[in-house]
Image (cartoon, rainbow, N blue to C red; front, top):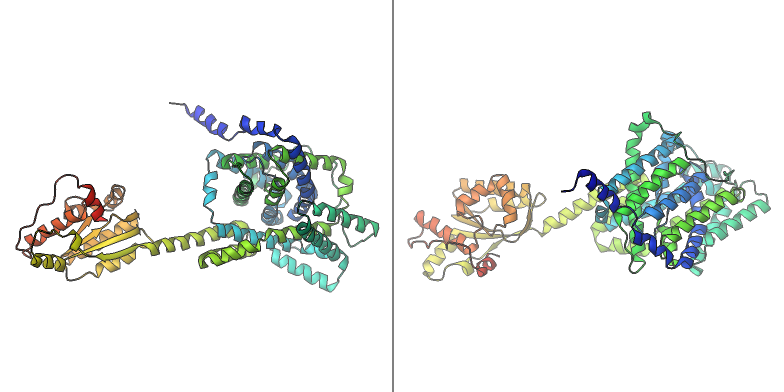
Length: 582
């Protein structure tokens, strides 16, 4: 037997990059280098914009794109995933910045990195697949709305009002604009967004975002537009790694935000990796390795002043569409951004904030897949309800609460749908009655014995309906419950069954069970229901003809039947008997 240390090392080794992951990087280097360059051009304005939107500044977005992008590319579980700052994460970070300051965000990123690594070692990645599609769609729609609302102050050229509720902040920004309108910033933002949206339809492979940003910067600098406020000074390089932000006294208050960031990073990263798998043939990500890679990325990014990172769906999609085949493309994207940070910081610092706002507004619009939303809303009323609730909660509350609400509502509606499938039907006895007795006995048996078949799950969401129906049984001496079609049973279902049997026994009705599956015996036994049924049947695995034989014996003993009852067969029932019990 292996030692605990050996098992722990095996667990760690399972999430480390394999030799095959690295070997594939040499197969098509030209394609990967070109794809990485293209993704870097697309990612630059997004990294700057999300850094500004988070409240830590454009330099934080660039640091995240470089450091987290490189580490997640090497250690992640997808060959095609591109990681960095994202709009969804920005939505979560804004209230953290308002409450705890920039240092609090860096602490949260560090804690989230540790939690993601712990999730990877616990092999929790597989459970993310259980998030329902309506929750994901509603989540994405809500994020798109929030990202768009966050850009309103910069798009209107007004100072960002105080507050962390994005809807209230955007409304106050509109009020400030109406009092003193200046159309310069709005025109720049609208032009950048229009170029991106129309260009994407015309030439999807061309990075119109960087073209639009360069054009807006040239116009703002050439025409000396004072209203077009630039990003501001950027450092010519990454800062030295530091833990100066570490504040152990704030650990307790930052734990809940860190859990929220961890949940979002895991959800968005695994969703993005799944999207990349779906866009290719033969690619399949490892969810636990992906969580490990994102954990290392978020552990390192705060040391360089970066915000928490996740897998970025839009950049990953660009990476796949431009022909990426390995991690080399994502690494190239990070390297190109690093070169820009070191060589072109003075030029990048002149980009107008309104231009970045236009980039993010266009990104938010492109996140909304109208056809997918329409299909989801039309699928079922439950799916539409979950989608709308998740989207509204994302805008009104925050992303983590939105996902929790969506999962709870989706789970409740799923339980309701499953519970509706459970049925309790009375079934005729004729097919199972012995054929070697008189018609008079058959009539007596049919008069005094009633059989019910339980179909589907007998669990907490449906069990009480069975109690009501069984309790209303009258004018019979014996009730046979045919249970071979019970798909699942929990403690609540077993307790309800026990209560029903007890109530019927008090009224002088004997309850026999047939077809109890071995897996359900423990549940019945744990609540004391199995003893009641065993006392009645003598065999809790009895098939229906055996239960009828036991019922005849009971009726004969009670003086209802004058013909002696045949003894139930001894030993295992033949194969056809089990079919009869169904």
